[in-house]
Length: 226
Image: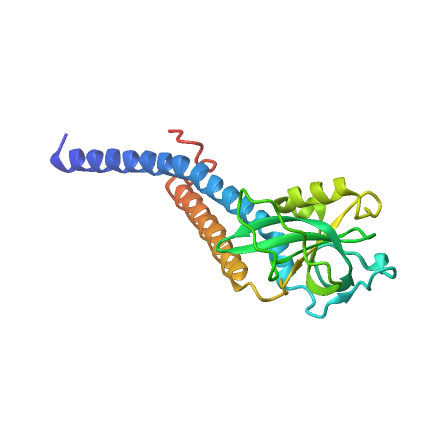
């Protein structure tokens, strides 16, 4: 066998080995890329309600006042305004350095999460003070009990006290001060996740295209198959 024939045989063997390595590389990468896209999709689903609220109408729904609430307008994840008389007790909590209070509106299915007022100072381990008893108006994000899991202790406490009245078995909470379009961080997180999912999808398509070029006569590369 001539030197030229040996060189051709060697080059052919190297090409075959490179093709096998390429197919195996795609087989290894593809599940990782798919998993990354799934994780990105799950994270996107976790913030989707915040995204929907970001783009929701900025004019508040008026739900009325004590004795004349407009229950037919109830819709979770909407910007609303209402007025009411606070319950005699509330649930206190801390967020960073600040104190917040979850207080009910009497004879209604509404709870309000608002910042603590003067005279409502509280620290963990202390007996909570009675919330300010003056009637008040509030604007904020309306959520069902199921959509506001972080305030479950407040829901439980006020439900047990009996000063709020569930509507069709359900309580609602207004998170004071949360306005549509205000939290730009939600938008940036969403764009980042979409970019992450898109980039992994592009890499997955490119990997399979590269595999097809190295194996034109057969089906797409299997998971690491020779």
